[in-house]
Length: 139
Length: 139
DNA sequence: ATAGTTGCTCTAGTCACTAGAGGTTCAAGC
DNA sequence: GCTTGAACCTCTAGTGACTAGAGCAACTAT
Image (cartoon, rainbow over the protein chains, first blue to last red):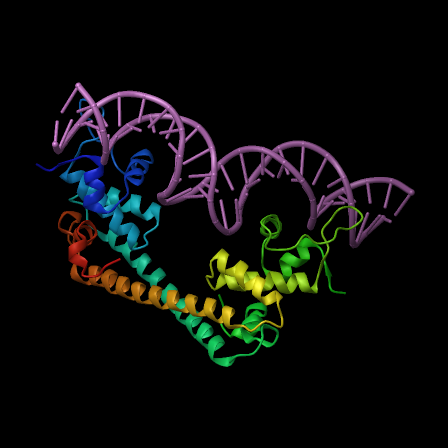
């Protein structure tokens, strides 16, 4: 019953077919058994693993952390401090990114407010983009 | 006085030397005049343009918008509504990104809070990553 | 049985750079 | 003027994470 073709697995997980094959190629997914006619047949555990991958990627975990997490997730009886640490790292990154994006947001909306209907020559957008000093934030 | 070698331009703008040449190759920067010995010589306007590019990239503008902005910035007497529109688009993107990252942040910190020192087998991090339904947000 | 979809492998392309090879030119010190 | 070492030149190829296409095989529905 829980036996998927690659297309079904794709539909189930939202990961595109070529991407699934790519993941197999780089060793993120184990090579599944094949049908008589050499087509991939996946089971529920492959589906779960792919969901794990897809979700972690969607959350912005970089590929190396992902590999590490999969490794760790395989050892069901190990303590999960290491997993914890990866999540914590990612959390710090996300916080950082949020604050930088917030500064950027302020910069962009400031640009929009401070110039009303002039010409490009006298446009603050151009100025701000040309001169980093004016934007008052550091990227 | 305002006459730079590629290395000086790089130091001045923070854009790496090969990247400057790359930008020239893809037509983001005009090909500058050369010295007797065929080395690139940049002037202040090239420096400004590169700063514009670097800053816009740092702010996350995609390459196509960048090209459009450079185009527009070239027409000093045109109205800057188009430029405005690009900035506004980017602002919407940034807002969107911030809200998605904020949701992600909540998810990550929820993962950390809800599991204290078990083993990987019973770890919520693994569960949450495996099952998207549990995270209550959509990426 | 046949048509149409889905699957297979393999190669090559994408984007925005980055790295390296192999050679030339410049700037400084003697 | 000469030498040395850094900076420059072009060109090719590599990166990561996919994506697209060619050319062919297998599965599914009628």
